[in-house]
Length: 333
Image 1: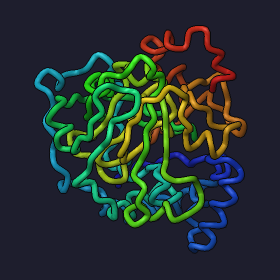
Image 2 (image 1 turned 30 degrees about the horizontal axis):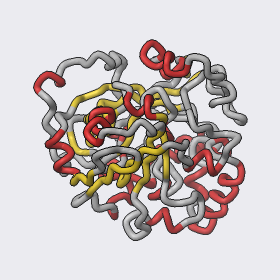
Image 3 (image 1 turned 45 degrees about the vertical axis):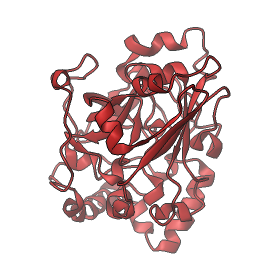
Image 4 (image 1 turned 90 degrees about the vertical axis):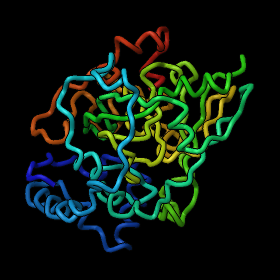
């Protein structure tokens, strides 16, 4: 980790629904990790958090992951890429929410080595004419990979800029030919507590599930990522396959996907089930709709000290605002 200071976070109690927060505190107390959760509250605890991050330098994969080929015409700046400074690889891979491996930001980098991303298959099924099961390596061969430099905005009010590698989800959905009844796309992550020890806790209902409207899933911005910074996805970032929807809060980016199902009905989503008054199905970045316990008007870019205004749809309004014309975005948060 570089010596760059990461701004202190808001209290951990602001990160999750109160019910889950209390369960989280109990969990961490039992695990003897309470001091880690307090990092970021005040200068002394902020310094403590930095000390705890230093050992993670050794966990950042710096050569163990294969480089991925990018489509010949996709190596240049893409039409949706942001010119904003990219978040350092070390921060992208050591500051993660991935509750399947723990509740603190550094837990995934420490514990995700138990995940086995190869071999791996993903099943695409449901309301489609040509359901199929694909091996992850076949998926990479079938669809030329594109680099997309996207902003990523967490509902906890921090953000990053990440160069993803992946394929547009719409191209995969076109391959299975959705029927006329398909309205939504449901995603499911791996359920295997031996590989994902955090699933042995009751902090969320497992497996993690997510969903999009079909038109959101088919939008050119929506990506199935298999890599970042030119290499395969590290386990802690959702290897080997994760969803990236840059105009939505980061919790929509389900990781380690094993099933994609086209449905007629709106599918349940993990955070909406856990806290329906705090986490809506749409989860569009909206600085005018605050979370019940903190403002969404500004954000902290990881690596910066000052907060910056949050942009509607995370800065992608020109591309996606028309998807929600006529929809009350205060009710459909």
